[in-house]
Length: 226
Image (cartoon, rainbow, N blue to C red):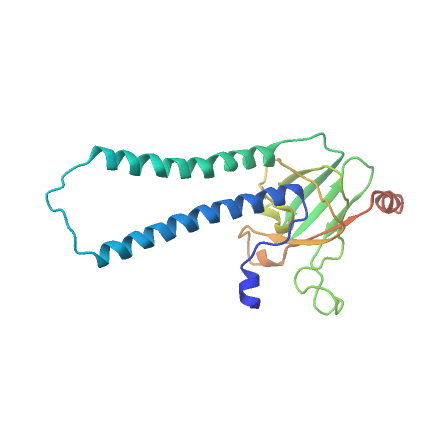
């Protein structure tokens, strides 16, 4: 049972991830129906003994088996284009977070405030708490207010990294010399984990990401503590 649960997507923590889950379920249902129909036709054709060796062409059949699959493709294409638009849309961000990738840690800077920047390293097993997640906890978490539109500016200072948080439905490459933009909104408090999903070197799997979503009032108190 635990094996099957690991194959599922993580629970949604943002409106973007909710749309991704809906699109995934919609696509999987279409693929499931097509697969069952194809399997049914294979079994029927294997069992019956009716063959027409003189049939060379049939325009009506060819028209039908061309048009029907095109409708299924459109049912997948339109939601996919809608998702691509939502992922690139910038909707009046209230907070800007600058993210820089290094070998092998992340640096964060709150550009809307002065002198608020820090590095985020993975916590060693010897220093991590018993309740923490191995290889996922960091010494400095990203503190983000919930229900606030966040704009992330992502780049790298050495190799190509990828800033990925599955529960938020976000993944963007951090490329040296290029600034990529990512927008997201967290709709509930909690801890959300991610990792670098680009093969960037020997310690590629030890670049965890930890976001802590809190109330806006607590976020301002955290800002004042710097």
